[in-house]
Image 1 (cartoon, rainbow, N blue to C red):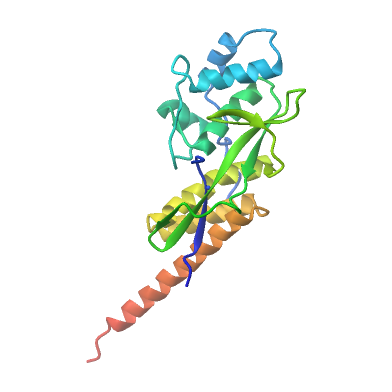
Image 2: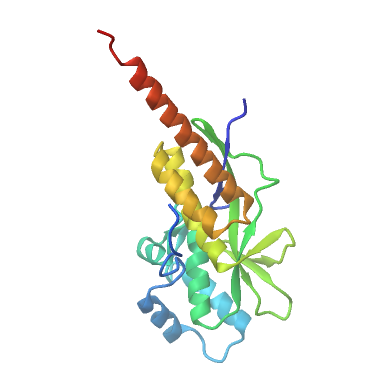
Length: 230
């Protein structure tokens, strides 16, 4: 029987509740103020976007380094200076929006990507989240920690609820990998409600349900087998 597949939106080498508030890409006010004080005035949207990207990744600026499987919020990336593709897209996108730059989030599908690892009872398939910058006369650009590249039709544009869902989906996948079934089910359910159209997120929730059901049945069997008949 093949291993169930988990999908993570991570660095490129992938309980019902209210929407996350504030959204995970909301940047720290002091960081926004610092950017606004330093960004060259009266520059084009593309120049401002390139300046912001350089500021975030260069040692002379914020110095954020790429690190796998640390999907967190803009706030935590600012504190740790470490981010996978999700965290970096949140940070870059959140500040870009504060500057009035036209950006949205995008997901490069894991559909054609081979599983990158096996972990216990799972295979892991990684996808990649990018920022879509739409302020250039040359058309949309895809932006991640590595830099800028032209728009690709394989990239799926995400609405904000779907982009937020990636944080919960990744946390849920990591909980499954760590054997925390109940946490995984709560997290993946939140993600699936935020992004019902993203198949990989729905699959993660199904995997979490299956694992929890399996653990529950094992617990019942263990309790039954442990009974003594006097």
